Image (tube, rainbow, N blue to C red; front, side):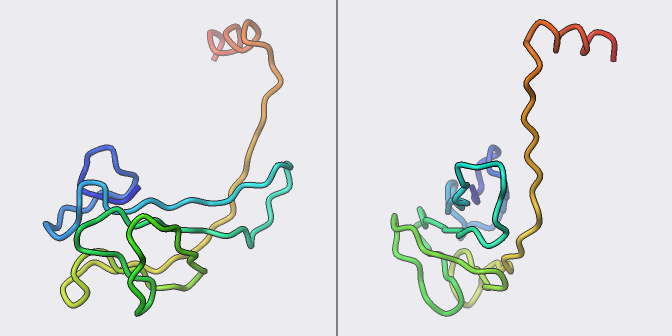
Length: 108
């Protein structure tokens, strides 16, 4: 989530940024093997708009974004811009029973 709220993942303080300005979503697979080309979407939730390149995202509609896209939050001419860059993610699943996990935590 991008916005002015303290709980936002990316917190911006510009008044042209809504409290909950936009949300990003990464489509995760149903397997442990993650394709680095998984689609990323953003959904605009703001009053002042979100742009992907030169195109304004429709409010409330998931818009695909690609690596290298310039994403603009707020008023187009006086705004905050970011470039989307994907980084590898590592998922680790533990099969340790809860009781065993607590034992390990107490020894750490």
